[in-house]
Length: 175
Image (cartoon, rainbow, N blue to C red; front, side):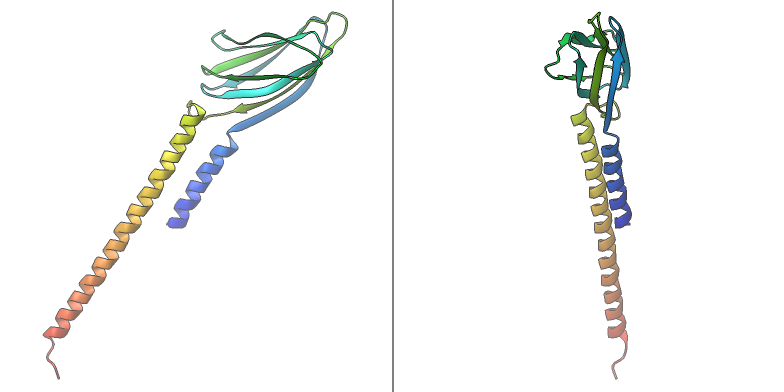
């Protein structure tokens, strides 16, 4: 029983840690003056961090949420290095990332790298891990209570057997 409970708890923690992050990376050529659109489905509380870079310069990047709220202002991107971005989903739905090539002479190479941090159950990350901790704590407490009750029953049964044996031996005639 104890091994089964420990295995279940380990599997629960492992499964949540495996689905907690989703990594994505791509490089795309955007024609002069065009817009590249990428969509991501997020749950409330999920958050993203990543980088975007363009070559040559003269690009813009912005994110729009499902409620048509802007999660980043149109930000110019230069060749000097990647632009870092982070945002948290305030609502469940489709989030749109747009890359606009403002260079009218040549195509723009867009490199996008990001990680989606899934929280699960629609909870914010801290709340989600607190919930997992509480569930595991309850499992440990229930196991401790179960083993305490089992041990107490075993001790009482042994005491009863000793008492019964003592009564039987005292009731028997002595030789």
